[in-house]
Amino acid sequence: MPHDHSDHDHPHALLPPDPALRIKALETLLTQKGLIDPAALDVIIDTYENKIGPRDGARVVARAWADPKFRSALLADATAAVADMGFFGRQGEHMVAVENADGVHNIVVCTLCSCYPWPLLGIPPGWYKSDAYRARVVREPRKVLADFGVTLPKDTAVRVWDSTAEVRYLVIPERPAGTDGMDEEALMALVTRDSMIGTGLAKVP
Amino acid sequence: MSRVHDMGGRFGDGPVVPEPEDVKFHADWHPRALAVTLAANYLGQWNIDVSRHARECLAPKDYARFSYYEKWMGGLADLLVDKGIVSPDDLAGHATPTPSPLAAKTLMANQVPAVLAKGGPADRPSNVTPAFAVGDVVATRKIAENVLVAGGHTRLPAYAAGAKGRILRLHGTHVLPDSNAHGMGEAPEPLYAVAFPATELWAHPEHPRDEVVLDLWQSYLSKP
Image (cartoon, rainbow over all chains, first blue to last red; front, side, top):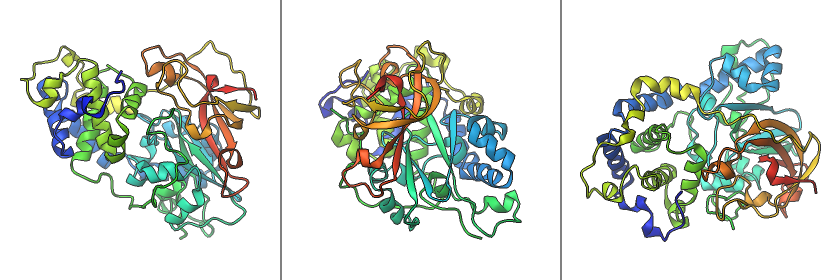
């Protein structure tokens, strides 16, 4: 294990100071040692740039809004319910869905690193990984919501989920009024990434 | 007592700046850093708790000034040296790299989809029986510190140390990070979602009915 050293003793300090050159040096070194297949890196990047993202989570939420049976299954065992839709894998091995309702608003954070449900929402946004979000949202969720332009009703309680283990949380936002006749595809368009983290609300059509 | 990464509840950080949903990475090298890290994890020389602890062990001034993926790279470089996979001379560019005996474990492009889809579940059978039931009031460890290893990895944030909460749900039995991060075995035990009233955690809570929920292992908890 790495132990505490003075700053200059950390091996990472031997790499070039510019981060772009630093990762290039690491990649080149590991490739030369036969420990990295550069083509594998391309597949990983393509997966998280193009294949996995918050539209997958939006489909789950839209289905929960449209299909009461699916909603019950999702709330009872989210891991199984979303795996049935093909969503499972790294950083989504143990899913729990939490539902916003009249008087309760849920928000997700990881104050210790940046745990996030990758298979449903993709790579976390920059702000989710920021010191400001990690430090503040557990203590002053409404002030953080104000940074997103969101105001909750005065009597609404906030429940902040700090992802301190390998359980990943998905917020089911409240279904907006005036969406009664809409099908799953149309509902999906109302579900934003931020609404599934809890820093936003679903869009009103 | 706490390390630099444990920042929940800290004062003094600025505003949170929202960003559009289609922004995936903020620099060309970010996806490379992500991919190199994931590919290196696959060599099987450490687990997720070890890699989290390696990032936490960055010097506070590095942790504070590094961007997210620089933290990943820093943790990775330190682990590669710590595990003897690369030498300091390799990192400094002073050596001609030689093929690694671990090369047989290298993640190849055709394996990537299956590996990412499989993930790494943390639930394990355990002979530790659950001591708490939904609704029980529990107290967390008074000091948020690894009790097995001085300065070691733990997942009890300092802001929730010594606090009283109630059990919301049992997640089953999961690998204990405090043990698994230090080569001491997975030591699985019951894992609970525990709800803490904001009034228990903060001197000036925003709302009397707000709560913070943490996922906490049984050995972090006791009957108050």
